Every structure is written in C-alpha cells, then in structure tokens.
Length: 299
Image (cartoon, rainbow, N blue to C red; front, side, top):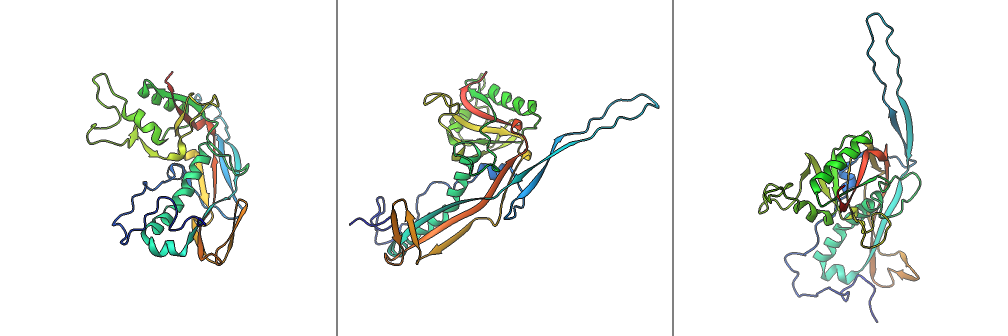
C-alpha cells in the first residue's frame, strides 16, 4: 500500500546511505509586495488606516489681500487580518532518514506564504475578504517591443494618477524582456555588462524586486496567447501591509488532519505535521498610484 506523503517512498526521494552535502532547491521565495509596501502594526481586531485624499492648495495673493483658506480631505480604510496557512504531513522515518531534506522543506514553508500573498496582492488569487486590496485594477501598460519607452509610459501613468514611482515588482518571466532591451548599438539598457550583470537591480533609478507571484498568463481576460502580466510599477508609499504576530510555525504529532475526503490520524500512522500560518492584511490608498506591466507592445 502506498504511503501518505511526505515519506521515504515519495516520488523523487532518494534514500542514500549518507546524506548529500547539499540539498538542491529553488531560491527562497520572498514577497515583493512586503518588501515594497510599508509595514504597519496590525492588531487582531484590525486597524483603521487614515488616508489623505486631497492636499490643501496654496494660492498667489496680492499685497494686503486676504489669504486663501484651504482644507485637506480625509478618509480611512479598515485593514483586517486574514489567515494564510499551510500544513505538511511527514512520516517520522522521513524526518529521521532525510533530516537535511526535511529541514529544507520546513524552512521553505514561510516562502510559500509569501508567494501566495503576492499572488493575491497582484491579482492572481481572489482576495480573502472585502478589507483586503488588490492591484489587479491598476491601469495596464505594455512594455514589449520598445521596453524603455514602455517603462517611461508606466512612470507617466503613475504620475498621472497622482503618485511618484519608487519601486517595481517584476515576475521572472519579465526578466528576459528587460535583459534583452538594448540601445541602438546593441548594448544592454538595464545592466552594466552582459557578462557581469545578470540581474536588473534598478529601473529608471528605482529598485526592482523579483517575485513569482507577480506573473499572470492572461492579464486582460482575453484567454491564452494574449498579454501576460509581468510586473507592477507604483508609488509604494501608498500601500500598507501588516501582520498580527508574524509567521508562526507549529508542530503536532497527535492531531487528525482532514485532507479532502481523507482523514489522517498522525499518532496512529507514526506521522507528524508542520503548520505555517500568518494573519496578514494589505491596503492601498489609491489604485491610480500603480500601473500593471504586460508584455504587450508598448504604445
């Protein structure tokens, strides 16, 4: 009878007599949205985020004239924490005989939370509730073809919406497009050298963060083969995120798990489970301060 994942018979697991010196794994997934947006304290009941929706305006006046009176307009949004979680069951024997692989799998669990958070913020996954904002409604700008012109257009879109561009979130699928952008002499635009510059750290002077959670194959709802979502430009001072207690990782060996139609009694099967979870929220002051980047031809 086949064992319940994850165990020593799981596909892809080799039971070498001596553990390998290294466990090959993908690079740790970090959340671009968390790195770009401003983190604020978030209590369990949620927090009201004050928003300045309009600035006071100064006016020129002649000598001895009355000075104008102007008032800011204000608003607020409630940021509610929503729970994001994942549970992975293991056999006791797997932890014993594949200790290094087990440790690496557990270490990467918080990365899975970050990736799902980005997928939600950038529009690939439905929001967990009405008090969680998404950037999928931002104006779309194509950066294919003349990539530099497309990036400038994205900067202009953010400025037109009232923001000041200060960061980029780029999907790995957009990296090749940026690396392939060259000037009239065939020299790369966004790296210092094709031999030593394999990454794009800045665009138009602002920092770039890569995240798999940014990519969306169908950015406009037109079906496969249409424009793909490969990034976001924005004024990230307009975005806030918070978590109640940070990421919690817990272990249990006497619980009963429900996995679809199956029930797994951990103690009965000599198994245990690792749970990673976070209570987190995300709010945006004004969606007009962001632009969605696609691989469509730049206008």
